[in-house]
Image (cartoon, rainbow, N blue to C red; front, side, top):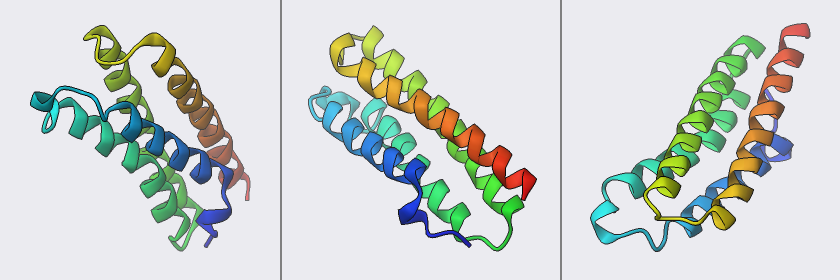
Length: 118
C-alpha cells in the first residue's frame, strides 16, 4: 500500500482537476450535462484511480488502476481539444492544462514501469 497523498502524480492530477473545474465554469448552460460534466468526470477520475490503486494490496492491482487513470487522461485530452474546437476555451487557457496532462501521462508510465520491477 502507498500513501497516495505523498505521490507527486496524485498531487499533479489534483491540480489538473481543479484547473479543469475552473476552465469549464463558463461553458454554456446547455453543456452542463454534456461536455462540462464529461470533462469534469474525466478529470476527477485521474486522481481517484491513482488513489484507489495506491490503496490496493498488490503492485499489479495498483498498475491496473494507473492504467485506468491513464485512459481517463487521454479522454480528458480529447474533451479539452473538443472544447477548444467549439470555442468554449481559448488556446491560451487550454495549452497549460494539456501540457500538465501530458506530464502526468509520462509520470504514470514511469510509475507503472517501476511497479513491474519491484
